[in-house]
Each structure stands twice: as C-alpha cells, then as structure tokens.
Length: 306
Image 1 (cartoon, rainbow, N blue to C red):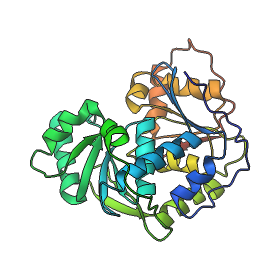
Image 2 (cartoon, rainbow, N blue to C red; image 1 turned 90 degrees about the horizontal axis):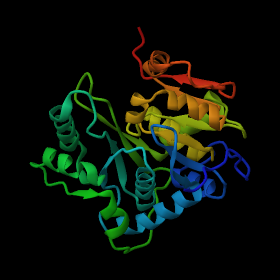
Image 3 (cartoon, one colour; image 1 turned 90 degrees about the vertical axis):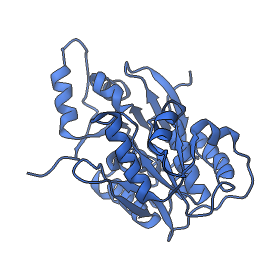
Image 4 (cartoon, helix red, strand yellow; image 1 turned 180 degrees about the horizontal axis):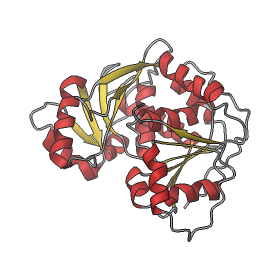
C-alpha cells in the first residue's frame, strides 16, 4: 500500500487563481499533495496524488473524446473513490459535462432510488451513464425504458480506445451539473460553468476559509453533494491541499473514524451537516484517545435555516 500524500505541498500555494478546473489540476500535479481514501476502520485503502490524478484523467479523456461530442452530458455515479475523481476530471479534459449522481443507498429503498434516477435521466439528457460494476444491474433496471447506455467504470477507464486529442473546457464554457437532493421535490439539475465553479472555489479558499500552507482537509460527505464535491474535492484540488476521505456509509457505521483521521493526520478543516457532529457524540464511548487541537475550521451546512 502506498503511503498517504503529505500535508506539505512541496511547491508554492496558489489559492484558486485558475480559470478552469483543468488549469487548477495542471498546477496541483506539480505538488506532492493529493487525495487519500480510508476504510471504515481508518485504514488507508487508496492514494491518488494530484500528479497521478492528472495523468489518469488525461489518459481517460483520450478515450472519452471518441465516445461523444463536446458538451455531451454524462451521468456519473458519485462514489468516494479514485475512479470517480479520475472520471470527473477526465470529463473536464474531454469537454464532457459530468453530472454526479447518488449511489443506491438513499433512504426510501431501491424503488425510491430508481424513481429518482429515472427523473434525473428524464431531464438530464445524458449521453451515457458511468457506474461502478457493483450497481450496474440496479441502474440498468431503473433506466430500462431509456436509450441511455450504462457503462461500468472499468469499461470506460480501460476498454475504450484512445482516439483523439483532448478538448479541455475553456473559461467561458460548461463545467458540470449539480442536482438537488430531491428530498422535497423532483431532483433539479443546475449547470455550473467553469467561471462560476472556479469563482466559488476561489471565494472558499481566499475569503471564506483562508487556506494556508499547513491546511489539510478531511471529508465523509458524498460527492454528489455540493459540499462534498466543491467544498471537499474541488477546493482541495484548486488549492493543492491534501484531503482525506471516508465513504459516507462507512461514516454512518463508524463516525468516530472521522475524528480519528482529524487527530492522526492533523487535519485543520472539515465539513458536515449538524447530524454528523451529533452522530459522533451519540456514538462516542470515550475509549479512543483523540487530539483535535489541529482543527481550525469545522464547517456546518446543509440544514434548513429555522
């Protein structure tokens, strides 16, 4: 197993001064930092340096440009994994518009999930859906009445031929589609542009949280959630900051692992709706020694303002 990426960048911090996501990753790849993925018990399971993320994303983008025309929309099941990060950024280099979609683990069961996915497909005009092999049958069943191809991550990453030069998005072009949760109404997709997304990241990095050279993030939020995708993944790339991730389902089973990562890796910032902090309090047994003194930002969001 590779060692985790360090907190120290090994290069100058550039706080989000990029016009596109690919520009941000191009620079982040010159740093020593990256993304680390942990199990429910806090064991390191995968490491993706920004250099490796860029290399793999560009290679995969070479496969995607032969799949669809520029600006085609791609439904992308949002796993907390290196594959999701690679495919999301591959779309950026290939000029395709990814739409992160939830895994079939939402409240309400399989029927509810299939209805939500059908609504997203009805409005999303997806050219294809990229899914982990473990949920291919569920997604294919949900979209049985649609003509949208369902392709596994493995097929996209390794089986498609490399056919053409890259066509990265420019600053005035599209970026990705963010769907609402669908908890109170049908899911609604909002198209983000490169300008709006990079401006959002820049505001978080420079003004909201004022990232510095010693910052390191940790996150359990799903990648289809804007706080997970933008606040944890994209802002980390755009600031060259190392970030440590655990899967949302692993968090709900062992929430104290989140706190352990903060303690052991000396993380300085994290985010959660209020229930995440409440769950840690409910599950806390006092049998783990923690040092949370490194934490300077504990973001709270995603809750209705009363």
